[in-house]
Image (cartoon, rainbow, N blue to C red; front, side, top):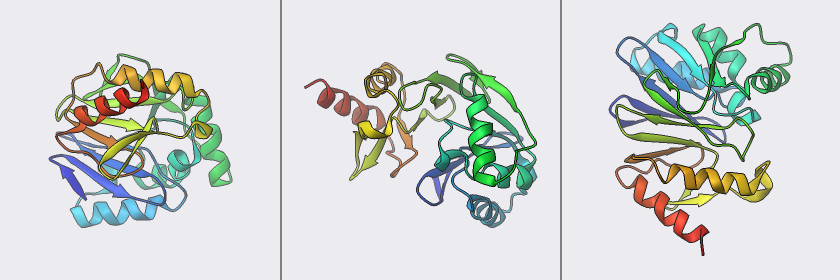
Amino acid sequence: MKVLNGIHLIRVEYANIYLVERENEFILIDAGLPGAGDVVKRYMSDLGVAPESVSTIIITHAHTDHVGGLAELLELTVADIAAHEGEADAVLRVASMMSGKPIDASVKHKLKDGDVFKGFRIIHTPGHTPGTICLLDLNSGALFTDDLLYEEGGELKEIPEKYSDNPAMNRDSIQKLSALEFRHIMPSHGNPILDGGKEALLRLVEDLQR
């Protein structure tokens, strides 16, 4: 579904995929679990957009629900892969494991904190995994928050500690996000929070400090 001008949420099993429009290209954020390729193909067909218009798939981190469908999406789109420089090997390893065969691709764009890539500012937010990244869309003010937190009932919540490699570092990364200027939150789990995203994040930070 279209959530903002130029930003679409594609609901796949367990986690969200986002499709972002740019002037002459489309970008996918994350790849979902196996089977996501068919869902993305149907969504883009309904939009009247050829899958070949996707130039890049940005992977926020190398967990199965974010890279499991990567092999399918690469066949569908012939896109480049982008991920944090410290997560690149894990992205290919886990994606290959989920597809049952080695992925014949490399991470072409190895990102680091502070980079501006395809209209996104890259924010390195370790904790959930060492190379987790969040993305700030400089066009819309939407912050793609990956698995640092999730939405439930219109509010943001910290991801349970058992799902993070380093829960204390994950909390530090949430604090880091609170210093950014943004309007909307695009979580990987749950619904987007429009217009009140910054306020929702600040409420979460305040709760975590109690």
